[in-house]
Amino acid sequence: MLMETQSTFNTTSMLKDIRYDPVLSGVIPNSSQLFTISEPVDIHRTTRVVSITYPDSAYQWLEEVLDGLIDFGNRHGHYGIINLTEDEYEWLDLVLEELIYSVGNNKNHLLAPLMELVIRLINDYEETYVPKLTEQFAKLAEEEVIKTETEDEIAAYAFLAIGYLLWQGNKKEKSLSSYCIATELKPTCWEAFYNLGTAKGKLGQSEKAIVLFDEAIKLNPDSGQLYLNRGAAKGNCGQYKAAIADLDKAIELDPNNVNAHNNRGRAKCQLGKYREAITDFDNAIINGHSSAEVYYLRALAKTLLGKHDIAIPDYDKVIELKPDCVEAYNYRGISKQELQKYKDALVDFGNAIRINPDYPHVYNSRANLRGLLGQFDDALVDSTDAIRLKPDYAEAYAHRGMANIELKRIDEAISDFHTALKLANQQKNNNLKKFVEQQIQKLNNPSPQDREN
Image (tube, rainbow, N blue to C red):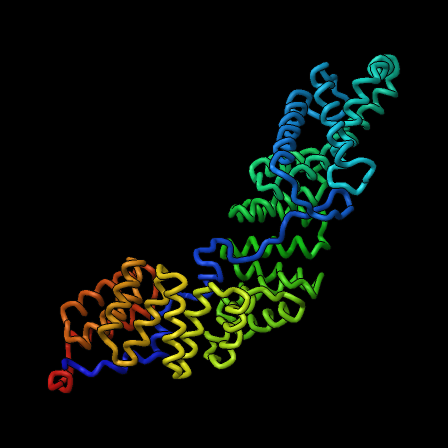
């Protein structure tokens, strides 16, 4: 044997030095949105309504109404007194019939502002004496300008309501168009900027979302929800310190805001403040946030602090809530391995592979454990599977290199370590780089004891 290397499979060393960042994986594999952005507000003016799911035909009808109203606005530049054509008048009359059937006298219905807008447009058409009077009386003409502004405000709430319903109906692009028009018609409507920012944030346009939340906060600086979503958008842009500042404000305004505590915990994890993060996750859970995500993140923070015994119950809870969460099985296996519960750890790794045989990280975890147990042939297979699924998996190359050394495949080991070193440099993984350089140095310059072995 060239040298004694079994100690390099020490589980603590491997977990610390050549692991991938578990916080970035999230509960859902390949999730691009790490920080939770709340849904658009389901309000028009100040009235909250219950969200209802409508058939596809209803959303299609609403899209047609939106297109018709956009056409009005493009032609006239406002939603005040409009000289409708007869065809437009008849179309609006049909729209009103549908709204009367759906909305009726319910002033709290989400589409009540749309119904009010349509009624006023129709009334303006029917009251043909209005333009004649304005030609004769300058004072009335001035009042008409005021009315135009009022009509645009009503139209803004109508577009806000349409945008919300279209968002619920998964008509994302149309929803964005409707929200944009609402911000133009009523630049003082914080709800419009909030909803547009929220929609863009959920679609991954975090930088644009931040700008819109800035505007909303200027209009409504005492809303914890606005700071929550701006903080989430900043977090998704990697601006973790700025995100924490916003989330601090959100919690100051609403101490029981579970999403704010959860998001702040995430941001603190990204900055390595795991103890503080655990406190945030504790508060989120105490205040009713019982999702698999928050238990998973709290478990990871405990794992990264080496508190494996108290991390395992959280992983248990994740698996109870989300039985197909491969990440929870993987990291519970790592914690069990740290506690020298090797058989239980192998069971967890096996369950993760059964649930998702294309998840490379669990093969890497199992390779580490099998190396520790002296099962070098199996460790080699697992590392190779991890590399097959993730060709740039630097840690897996390092694990395979260690297995190759034990199997006296020195050339293959050197090749693996050089690949691992190249990838570690590209990925700026300094811990792995240092570890691999040490192994290459040992292979190139073995000690007298190594030569004897």
